[in-house]
Image (cartoon, rainbow, N blue to C red):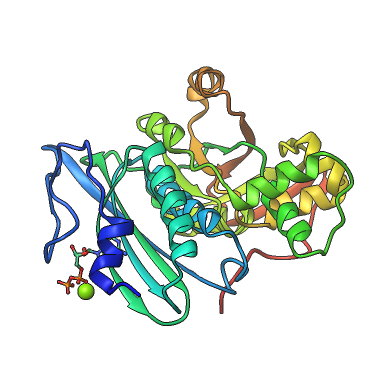
Length: 318
Ligand code: ADP
Ligand code: MG
């Protein structure tokens, strides 16, 4: 069995093309260059086996999802990903597991041009903590607190898909057709909306990534901004696959309350609508207006002219 240092050398030390990494893995600290005029955006996510992923999840999927979830936070601030550090706690040395994990990790990092610059490796129950570092021009980050009354509320992609994917994965729902595989993939391999986040600088006011459910995450924006919103439930973009698998009523419920989609929810003034339509075309990603921000506090859901009430709130750990 190799020691900790051999393990780090074998699985987590790779050359990088990034010129801003003066020193990567191997010393007591990494040495990194933040470009002039940029703020460093930093975010940490921990994933615990049995809580954030089933224990038997393929290791490459665990790694890819951890990277995606982390980059999603940078995207939600309009930050450009640059570096990551990894805290890895392993129950045992398992070469096959590590091989697959490292492959998934480096593939995901390479997709976004991110360098792994350091970390820590310890023994214990399987847990990984990833910290992402990115750049955002000073004072251009998309903050939760920046929504304004009169802004329109947008969601990217098709919310609720990962929620139905989770129901399928847990055996709480049975696959109805070929769309089920796509929904499972949305759960296991979410796509962080990095390009969207970058393009929203200067267009959007506030943004957040939907990890705990659309209404709950919108609630964070409203609380931080000291405002309220009204959502038109019939405007939710429900994908054909989600509708086929879950039916319309359940699809709406999932789109509003299920987590794990990692789409971006953002607010933008009405005059940006043409620019946002062009952006949706360029990224080949739907950006759907689902409501608007108003001064009156609270979140009101409307469906066909009547109040709509949500059966479940979003995910909470405690
Ligand atoms: P120290 O004892 O000084 O904290 P470590 O022995 O923990 O250093 O780590 C040695 C080097 O390997 C450091 O550069 C650290 O950042 C890096 N490292 C440790 N574990 C990981 C990991 N899982 N992924 C990437 N780099 C790692
Ligand atoms: Mg250490």
